[in-house]
Length: 275
Image (cartoon, rainbow, N blue to C red; front, side):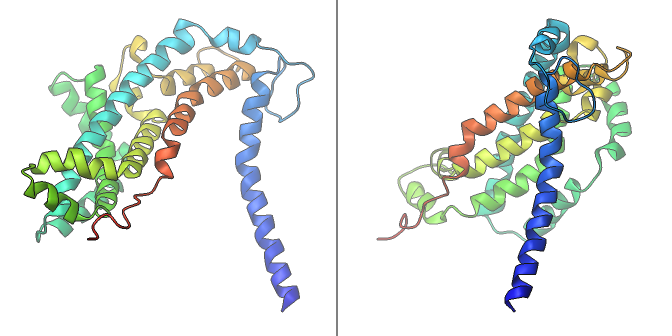
């Protein structure tokens, strides 16, 4: 029995190490190649460290303008998604109806639709309503594409907030909107943080949507402009590509660090409704 347990443990450890290597090796390549003057596709420790790759990509056309566009698109889309998801999840969580379950199942089905399957009618619709090649149109579609899963997540987190707390606020004259803003959302801070991070990350790495809906090069986000390193510039400069990838990943990492305390805070409502 002991030998079997040891064998299983070793097999599990080997599997975990293989999975870890699959994630660590690409990350190691990005970090090492960003400071390697002779970077290629192999993961090697550079003979000398240089910052020339960062100097080459830190320009308005290559980095600053695309990053600003990404922040505007993803930031606006995330705010719109979180606000609409909270307003939609509140009645689903607090009021019982025969339509709740079909509506939630419809939302769950909507999350399974591949984005490529709906881009052709969306493109035609955007042309008709004059939203093609506009930042606001892309923000609207970003929010609409992330909203189904955001509503599902927000509703599940909202179910963890006791309704008795709101009933006490209603007794004092608060409206449902006031109880949502002043009681429910502050108490489900970790849930709001999860929806925010998830929505922002999914939008930040989305290449296909802005590539289809935006036509002007000056409006392209970083997720699209990174494609320039593989085509129009001829031979791929791997060092500059890695340096741009490091810069491109920084906003997501900073966002996670900012909300990390909220993610681990839990709801801590153990004795909130006692007495």
